[in-house]
Image (spheres, each protein chain N blue to C red):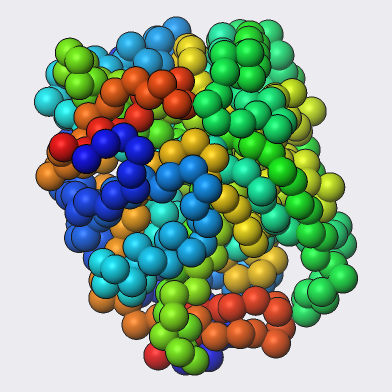
Length: 157
Length: 157
Length: 157
């Protein structure tokens, strides 16, 4: 199967992990370490709560088309800290080297009550983050770079 | 039991499905097709990440009371595309015809860093959407139109 | 183990509960009652959809450091109602008295399309809320007040 077709596969989330990340930890490095330490090849964020600082995220410009160009992606860097209001995402092994490819979208609260966020590139933990990860057993999916979306997309074997 | 009482029922999410939707797909039609193709009568969005375009969503005016009137619901239509920062929701069979009734709330990122969203009525997939659905086995709940909220509400038999 | 170390523990979410809360219910009191009535010691919000009113939430000021001071936390009170676009969080028993400590972050839609939210302190249900709770069986975690973050933090025994 190519990376350009829809698919549905049945998986299992029998293994669930509750983690606390501590202030200053790099969110992506810590999630990658948890995945490796506990042998979690494929997983999703089932729940996440806490706060983040030093965040970098991207959003796409209005009227952007496919293929998405680099200049269509607007990068925003903020010191924060922010309440972590939502963290959605998953990780799958890279087809190239088997390393976990972590794909996260974060929504962040500000002191005015306004909310910001996007496709997350970098973040550090501010107050402790309580994260529940669900494994996706039975999945045969890898991540591979797409020339169309300029992102890592799911490759189902 | 009527649609006007609180309840709690124990369910199971033993069956989990990982789906990729492709650019241009109608989000609601595709979710409905996945539910039908895989015999998922009742389910929840456990995780969703990707981006959307051509979205229509509603929010309620401040100081709206119950019953909610049509004029209290403000409809917003946006071309996007937007990062899909969060997708919450569920589907249950309509009591009338057994068809899946899909109830979704979406949160969308914009290139300024501002975030928008609401009760989702329409959307198309922009870059591929990675969606994990959990079934709710053991549930005896249907959806039926409420004269009070003007929405499809849970009917527990 | 102290409350100042990262940890990961494996848990199970075998028991899942679907609840409907009705207009006017106190969100925190109702979740606490569900937890007690069904013997759910530890759990997470797997999915939540509906609308809220009379909300009080907090966010932290930019450049706040640790320890977080009371004056760094900005409290916002809003009558609403708002679409409940996302509800993230968990509950664990207090080490002191075993009562459920509920930690919630809410994201709320407004009629302009703007989105607001934060660490939730109070809320009432507006239109019925459909909430799916997952238990965290096998966890040995309690909540205890931290002098560093001024919040209830996870204590793993």
